[in-house]
Image (tube, rainbow, N blue to C red; front, side, top):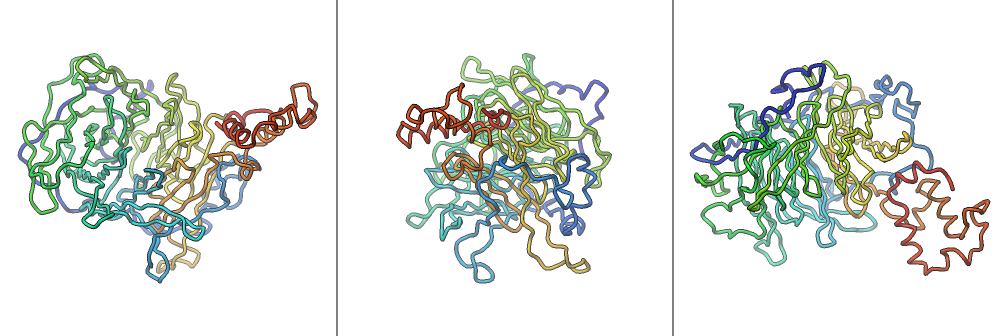
Length: 580
């Protein structure tokens, strides 16, 4: 979000003030003008100093690593042998099908339209097929991945123009609904359905609208900073975090609406109780959502009954809002140190109320300026839940840090500050291990860490390969286009994807145990496996000292391997364990 605007007053000695009058309000439409088609503010952060980097740029950051040791070029030292999260030794580029500009397969490119965003990539597995969605200048594209000649390739399935520069994209769990949002509060939703040709798929427009301007008075400030699907009020819905300090809630259609309909599908949500925190809420409000442009040049108008639930206002612009997987909470972060947890509670009549909120905070010395702007309060850009809703991770760009809380106790269980060189943005927990977190710096580096381990050794930094490029005019030869990270995604089948402006990269992760990956697991786990398989008991002096016939090796091999695999995760138990 816009850090320089609406940052509020500096926190006092007791921390930032509480949210002023949390409430759920209703918004609806009326007459209004169509959303602007101009790409206001959509230019990428493209100064010479920021868009190109030198081979020895990292050496200028050595002061950030004081006391951490040396890993060469001013970088953190590599993790000790045996402590790692990747199964591949290097990055691999995912190329598209078909010829590229030089006759080879094309690279998959993305874009970013604000220097504080990195939400142009997502990955899902639908029907056993691995798919990625990527956003570029005024475009959203769906690719289906497949293997070809030992490499991963991407076949374009569907694409659609947006008419604006996207800040964030999202896809429903069923895979049928895609959404993109960006500057000026613009939001577009699509349905992935059948195309005109047999076997072809297309993105069909569901609705487009302009959100925001709730209480701020300037529609230009109403940026849609992030979009997330999740369980809200008992079912899958879409949350849109907006710069106007509100979170907009929309329904997700279960089937494709008729394409010949003369009115847009009703995506409004009316299942939240307009009286949060156990106090009477304000009178329901209505704001002009503008007209809904169709791609034929005509406009659908919101009717007076078209109202949708909105959560807020928060005490600052909302940069990201994410429902917990178990449907109990909504986590919201913005331009302050405060992380808000809103608890959803079912009420009579099938509606839900936000009965209370819990605030998670962190203390860190804030820089005076960031990207040339004055910093009033260091903010948070993105947040992510782990798979069992017990941990919440938050990234802060101005502090170059990542923080992780245990939700039940509100305790800060992990923080990563010194290991980062640049602003931290995108982050995600591993689907198969609720304690392993991945996050990306603004460029050049991705981190993996076991947040359940107190050991600094349970961390791995993955530096992106250098870009090939022609030196920019007036710059010395060693300088090349910088590796600006536009998105990060982790597939359930164990692949880490990272998008940059120039390409899509992938790397295998340690997500299952096999005899081939056994050597990559922590030494304590390897020693335990020796003990178990050999049948050594507590009284044995060394692994293998027992009678092998009395051990688990008497079980069928597939069953034995499954037992070992299930014992391998979470990795935190082995990173902190002593050898048997």
